[in-house]
Image (tube, rainbow over all chains, first blue to last red):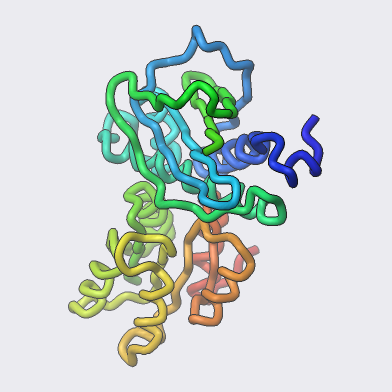
Length: 160
Length: 124
């Protein structure tokens, strides 16, 4: 159980705040209701799109949203009203980047009164086959896997 | 009625354009504040602007202050559509002259309500 004091003292990454922000962003923008499931590393899909932004502050973090094109397509389709077959890669990447931007913005407001107060960098996207972020072994991170039908999303927060 | 959405995200521009078209209006798109200024200074008669805050180059607030100082454009109502959701940001934008403020994420219903309100209509 994460206490307010833990958050104030930066003992834990406040992952639940970002998960809540992602759930809300996806539901409001696309109507999909994601469910958080237990993380199973064996079942991780190959990432093709990683939306990311740096949260700069006293306790800086890297926030990422990892997914593949098959997951991004229905999400962006329901956000924009464009049929999945008409979505190009640029729109898929842009949709995931915009979602991580919204997650960062929502979480920023929630964490304003804690030691996690941060400024947002410009969001950016990493793309490619099986793209991943490799960090040093001791880097603390928070991982949440969220699904809805064929949509698989992985939210990660790295303590920098 | 002709409207203009300014956002570096093509997805957001598409969402706003689609809502405007559903309401029976036309929507032009600009992916930067500079492109929007060029559009305004052309022959386009814009009657409502949707403006993102955080964009590369000139940001939304700078754009807003610029057009509010211009006799030709200062009457155009501006709806800020942004992830900037801190109270001080909203106050700053209102002081600079925005007529409505929408924070991302938003639902399509919320967006349509704001468009109708911005045009002086009532929403039940």
